[in-house]
Amino acid sequence: MKTKTPVTTSFFFALIVLFSALTARAEVELASDVRASDAYNDALSVAAMNANWTAIPADGTSMLPYYDSKSILMIDRASFNQLRAGMMVVYRDNDGDLVGHQLIRKTENGWVARGINNRGEDPELVTAANYRGVVFGVFHSNGVDAEKLAGKERVIGKSF
Image (cartoon, rainbow, N blue to C red):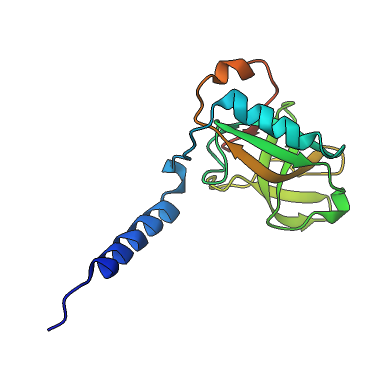
């Protein structure tokens, strides 16, 4: 009779954890031991390497497990013509907010976008006029000393 080895049991539990994380993405907690101000300063240092890059703090949970309110987004002002379905982009919505969501499909008038955890699509299209850039990297933090980032504009993962 065969018995389960510790490796087989560990693998089984790892699959359960992975499956649980994938099916309940909105409840994922991103882990980091980096202070918010350090993550922001590191992101600014990286952004300084290219004139088309910028670093902006994020907010919201619609884009978990990719980023949340403890994250700093790296944004590249890539050409609007280079956009493809699946990319995460930042655009300014009609409320004046910077929104960071994923492109779903291209239409005649612009791109349809949606937050990963949102059931519906964003109410407005991403167009050449409101598009700000592509998210190409994320710095995660533990959120400690986040008040040092108060007053900074944020990219919001809005829930629609």
